[in-house]
Image 1 (cartoon, rainbow, N blue to C red):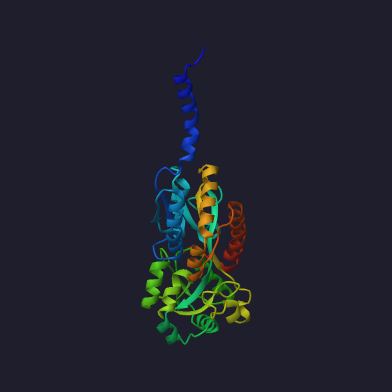
Image 2: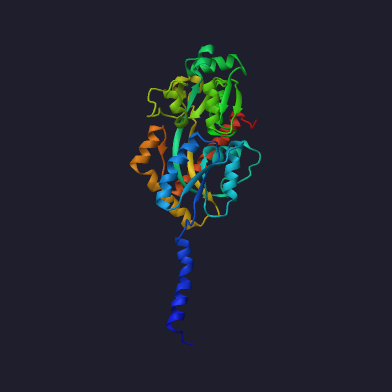
Length: 328
């Protein structure tokens, strides 16, 4: 049976609709879930990247904070999302440490997510409340190790939550120095820093970007960074391995943050996300902005990010085992 022109046009249009629907993604605002409270490094990085992604994707990118359980609550929400418009700013905690630290997670860090790209890597920085440090006579990393060993449980160590790199940096320090400090997990770096500045906590191994403004303002005493090398953002600060003496030789505990989608996200959408996020992270303006905060911008491939997650999962499983770290 022959088709007339109107029928041919209708058929061609109907066949083109699926392709058009796919190319129209995203079709509404994207939620970028931060699994910690506002004010911490995860939140700062998400809010730096969001407007760049929004410009490239043509839809609003709205940052939402879903804090709790060392990032597990927010990560689980994204793992279960099926709307195609929900992403996660994941961390070394949510996707490398928590698998070893928690007996059961409400998500699978590998099976439930599609890695998009590494957003940034940052060192942590050992910071103390200046008045509390002076009271204990702590002026260096070696002083801290000595005081903590001589006074078990006397010093209070804040963190952004159980299982975060901030928590594990402290646990690694404790295990290598044979010291004991009380750990107080918060729902994010922001509230932990507020209590540290107020003198309610003694010390913290915070991510450098969130701690840097307080260091520059003289409200926190910085002793060292936790990376393998000094940070260009604070070049005068030694590494803990440099300043801590023989007991801390080889100490290294850095953090990273990356963009992830639910594993249900279509591959072509993940590929577009990677291209757009990488393009944003490779612009001089954003790279310089992150560098000024002590972060090194990422922007590599999804495969590279997946490989990093696998390597870091193995590394932190060993650290958790050796340190004896537990969820309080």
